[in-house]
Image (cartoon, rainbow, N blue to C red):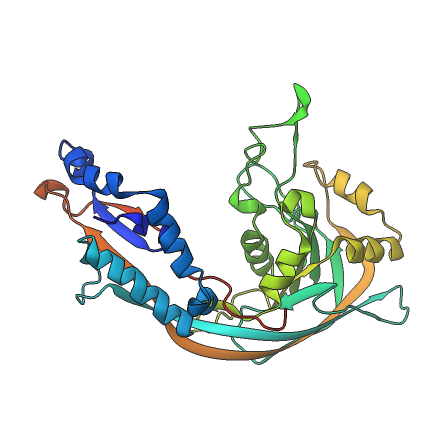
Length: 339
């Protein structure tokens, strides 16, 4: 029996009774079937040119979900969708953005950044154009406001403003050993959800900011700016909600470290000094003598994507409504001939 489906990037629901006495009997054939050659065969298939990068809403999606559902069927997983199929429809929208970003410092002539080499920008709002004119820029440190008793905003009103923030969580030194990070604050070396770009954009929306700009740094991010460029300069995807994501922050952006350092220097600020100040709970937002203007023209396409769901039922009727869920993603970046 083939069991390499777990790594493919799909959803599997398994009854908790498998954790009881019949677990070994049910799972041993599957575990024995996991081999290097078998896993490599799946990797080769899913990453092949035929699958065209597995982009949502493309031929690659059709090939991917059919491949996965076929594997589910061959190993005996039952369709988990109540309609009797392996597929669950998900309303998605693909968004292609053409952004233009300029900074004006101290009233001097505007500096226009180059897309995507200097910056990337897009919006989760499903509309054809986003315009932000002359928005005041405020540096908000790491942009944190979580349960760790940490608030980078300090009740400063950032509504309608462009907030500039650092990547990841604040790296707080261990008070007993400054060479290490404090495990009690943002889980030390581990990154919490508050350090993810998703949270930073979410809190920006809650605070009413017009735009949220993250300063990319390779070491704390653990990936170079090229990854940001190749990911965000292509078509991106979001849920196609009834309100067209109107509650999302209007503009979300990344800029390179060099661009950030120059912007701050032009404003009479030092990047390293600001970054150092941002690892203290006492940090307060710093209003910069600069304004941002952002114009994003967007092409939006709505379509139905699909999750692939298979179920392996347990044998204990008392636990039949309890599940262990294994989940991953089947999609990837798709084709992007421009890069």
